[in-house]
Length: 46
Image 1 (cartoon, rainbow, N blue to C red):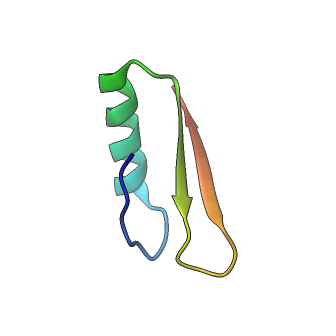
Image 2: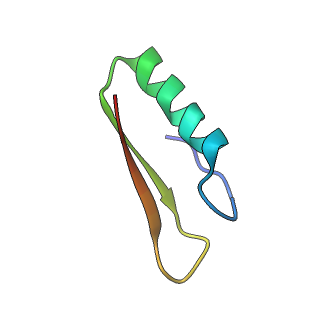
Image 3: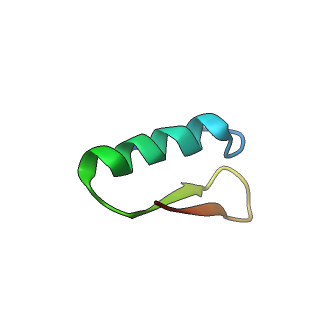
């Protein structure tokens, strides 16, 4: 698990989660952004 304070989910965050998934051997990851009143999230599947 990694926590960061970001304005919006971008290509850098997506690339980072893809690398984490490849290293860990997992197939599914979630990016959650709690910065705004409405939750922003993205599901990444390898």
